[in-house]
Image 1 (cartoon, rainbow, N blue to C red):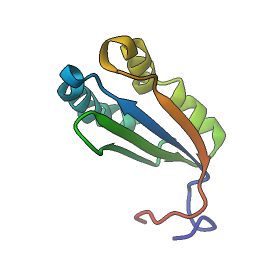
Image 2 (image 1 turned 90 degrees about the vertical axis):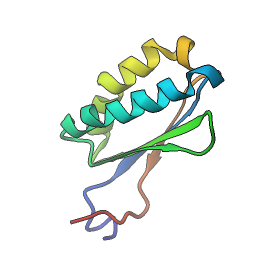
Image 3 (image 1 turned 30 degrees about the horizontal axis):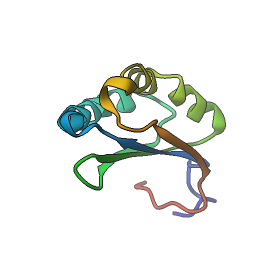
Length: 106
């Protein structure tokens, strides 16, 4: 599916670096956050990834800027930001992106 056929126009890529003693807590938080992402109508795809013991990524995509903004104002982002000092070694890196191409299930 190309972007011409895809419901995806914009995305977020978020880098999270957990404090070493909080990495399991961050992993559990992200696992639990899937339930919240599934409740968001405008969040078409949502991934939580781990690339090493303390580095996590959230990648999600949306049909428009309005849905992306709603997600940024939603429960997942609010909870992450509220607990950032406790959980993370570095500030969250939140990158807004345009979807160039996508393959998603039909």
